[in-house]
Image 1 (cartoon, rainbow, N blue to C red):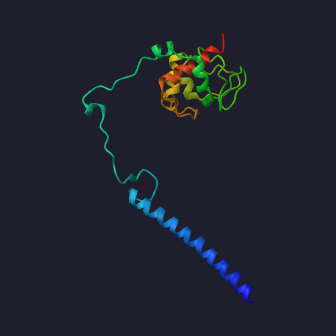
Image 2 (image 1 turned 30 degrees about the vertical axis):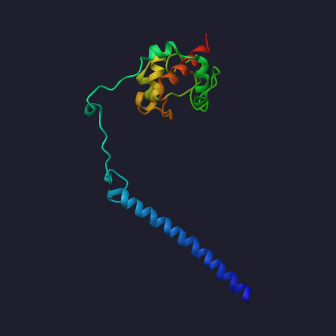
Image 3 (image 1 turned 30 degrees about the horizontal axis):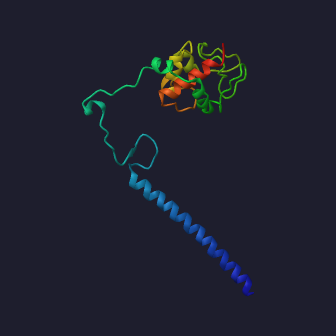
Length: 178
């Protein structure tokens, strides 16, 4: 009889501990939501941040923003060998073998190829509307910010920030075909 009471009490304590922990997490989430957001409780347009961080713009700094070197200069010095290392990020969705499509179209011969030229692959209309041919310059602009280059594109990649990395990758892709 004593053993059954001990088991029941133990289970009650465990259940109480789990419920108490859940209550603490829910309460913590509510407090964080209250501290960091003001306004209504919905998640629509009326949801406003509770604080604003002011950032100085280029005009406030009193000078022009220095642009990096032109892509043509960087591309002229690009290394296809270094670009092969950049390819790893692309290989998750693309293949290098002609006619083999993954989530994205194959990239064999992409430099100089018409956009939407891969048979059997359904391109997003937004990408087709932006460009006709994948020149090195167009690939550079697309790889820097795919969603900014072709808003609504199905490509989920966030972009490659360094111009040298983009130039090396494009040089690698261009070296694969004749």
